[in-house]
Amino acid sequence: MAVEVQRRGDGSFSRNDIAKALRHAMVEEEGERLRSNARKAATVFGDHKLHQDHYIGQFVNFLKNNTTKRSSGS
Image (cartoon, rainbow, N blue to C red; front, side, top):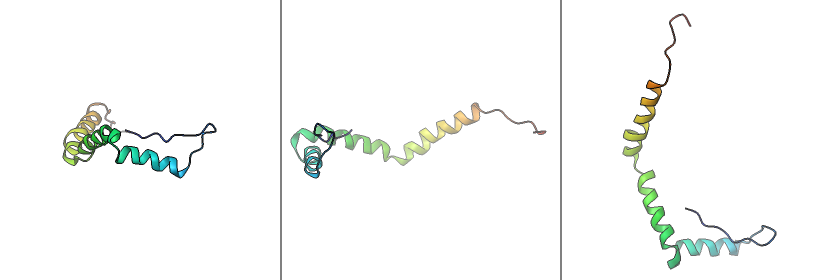
């Protein structure tokens, strides 16, 4: 999910170019798909329970299953 700012031939852009790109994404009808995708992503990334229960749990299990135990003499 990104908005590309139109650049000139030399790669530069102006604040008006940035404003135009943001207006396109946030206000204009053509930006609705981008806004919809951003809302969907926000529900996933903002779901703390999902992160704690699922992702962190999987990471802990990975660490438990993929680490070697050190002997007491190390």
